[in-house]
Amino acid sequence: MIGYYDLIVGATALERGSQVATFNKRHFAQIKDLGIIEPK
Amino acid sequence: MKKTKISVTDAARNFADCVNRTHYQRLSFVLVKNGKPVAQLVPDDEKVCLGRDAAKALAKVKLSPEEAKAWRRDLKAGRKVLNPPNRQMAIILDTDVIVQGERATFELEDWLASRPNDQFEVAGITVAELWRGVERARRPHGACAGTLCESYSGHVSDHSLYRADSVCARTDMGGNWKLPGR
Image (cartoon, rainbow over all chains, first blue to last red; front, side):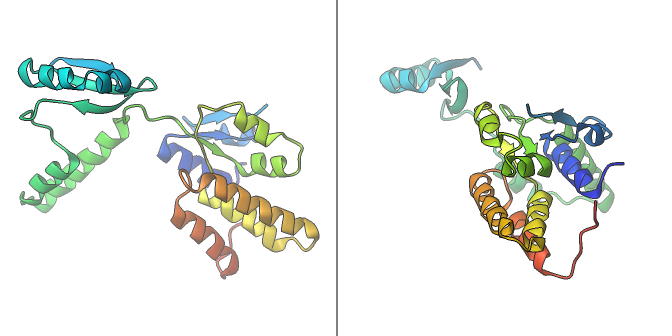
């Protein structure tokens, strides 16, 4: 289940038209239309 | 009206010619710097509507509450579909990326450097999380994390972290307001 903080970060990204760089792709993937980058 | 792209350097070298062509041939020039439009040279009498012109005109209009509501709704919908020209899609760094960078389990600085064309941002909630960690730390590591927070705030605050967010993030740490746990 996605955490509160992640939800806020995801909502911030959606509102600003940004992507999120995270190692926690599984959780953020639950947010529809959110662009996710997994740093390598 | 025809718009011609021209580099800032070429425009500067041929400025008088550009002005003459703008005035007599009714041409408009788009000045380009590093491949991106930065300014325009347009005939003096060409009507250019700026945001402030629109605001001035709207201030004179008396709308009924229903009309105002509909206008606000349309404006909101319009903003959603409107992509500002050349707006770069920024990347928000999640807390785990910053923390792993601090713990040296991930080469964050190298990764950031490997993406020179990207703009990075940090959400206010992430700064709050980091400061929360600093406040809770009771070992020397806390001081290091504090330095890290300052360091990242310094890197990002000029262009990508709302000042108010930064202040609120710190204020929240010292206040009674508690963030829900993960």
